[in-house]
Length: 114
Image (tube, rainbow, N blue to C red; front, side):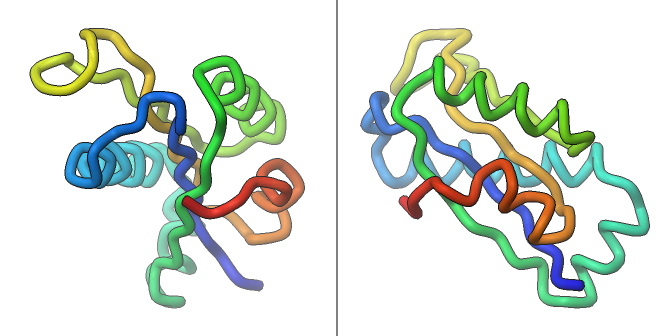
């Protein structure tokens, strides 16, 4: 069984590459800290596959958060501190997993890569 982690990024914010990269890293680390240790070990042994996907806006980001939580997945919603590009409290990214690919794909399989 293959494991992966996905990170969803809002496209409406038009984040600069460096800012987006930092937000994606926050989401990745946040989600893995909430993950079950067995999932984490399997994911690590397989090379820690990560996929960055795009969502249109905050509404869609929150919809996917709810879907992932309803499916019993570890999630990490990133709220920016507002020191640089966006206003304080802006929701930027959502990390999901790691979990088995099939489980994640049932929720995020229709989204496109950044």
